Image 1: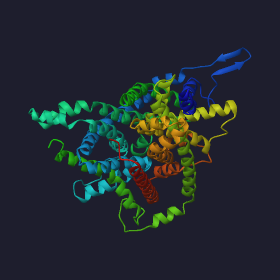
Image 2: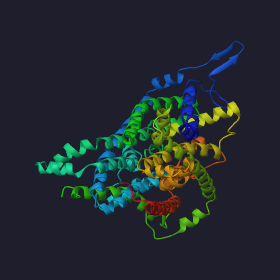
Image 3: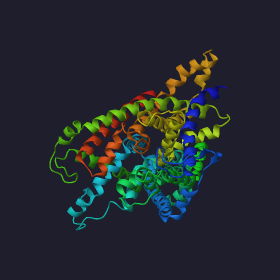
Image 4: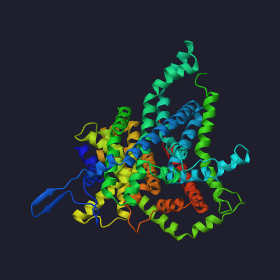
Length: 288
Length: 269
């Protein structure tokens, strides 16, 4: 009975403002665009002939027929996937380094990883524009050092998107890895060493497999939101970037085509449901 | 010997922290640049800070953003604490799986999906029952409470998981009523998590561009929206100055929160 009293308010709130909106998005994805407010046709029409359900699959047909959309989905998955791998390659040694650091430094090191997460995401993406631009800091430095003679193309391309995603989402990778690696009993590695195992082999055979839940959790925490990322491709990827989050934004704000924007969102959500289910199970497993 | 920091890991720590903080340091340094060009150093100046203070659009948007962040962080704290409490303490109730999913999904849900869906809900609601009237601060607050609730719930749940329940049981044994136990025992013990959760919800709200863009109306332009439209036109030292002030404010807040938490309890384990 007490359970019901405690959870009623947040439960109702989340159902109304998180679950129901997706159902409405799905409903509108079956409508036709119309001029007026709101700019779509109603799902149920009441006319002289009584009630009639008016649902069309046109918007989904557009997503399939126009290669641009399929490409945008694929690009988004590719950008997010490759960025996740880079995030892991940088985040794993970082998390492991913090675990191995002298105890008194650990708290500070961990705080330093979390701190950027508390500052503005928009500002951190903006910071990279100044670094990567044609006449930006990195190019100026490379030219001053005589390493290159003309500015490298570092921005408005895929490279800048990778940098942006890895930079913005690194804390999400490091934290679950740290939590997992911290639990690892050093006696296991000592035992491996005593039995003649070399450090790298011990890492591959003991540490890596035991940290797998952290790797999966961190990768999903980076991958899922990165797929729908809008700010990073828009500011760092340049105007021609084709990523699905940006396509959705443009359909809504530039083309004002709400039904197609809804269909784009519904398909993205369906694609992400499986990885989201995993993350829920991982989080629950940790609690149990 | 085996738990020592190897040279490779030490190097990776340096690389990692330079990567994390290099861009931020460059951003701050160039906010004090006399030149309009963000990338050419032309001497020290606080010119851009002075100009920033006289920027009426930014001043107004800052006030709007702060108001939204204060209200929505407080709402998220209330709902998130209840949600975290329910998820940690009540293992079995009807709809728990759905509740758990709803309380964690906002953490990873791409913002464009959340923002668009919420806007569609608001439009549909307005059509059906006439509420909310148009979009503005209220709709942004509702959206941010929803997002913040998930973060607060995770933080509170984690804190409750590492919590010694014998104190509560002792109080109950001594005849305290459950609600009183919650007020005098549980609440003070999870206070650091509540402070962290509130701050997290506050900064998330202050920083959100995507969801606010979908759910805002013509009269409610938030600070990130102003920054974004300015950044789209190119880098400007004024934005660097604004970013620096923002970073200083966050650093002070986090340090104060860290002190409070450090005083309240040792870190877990």
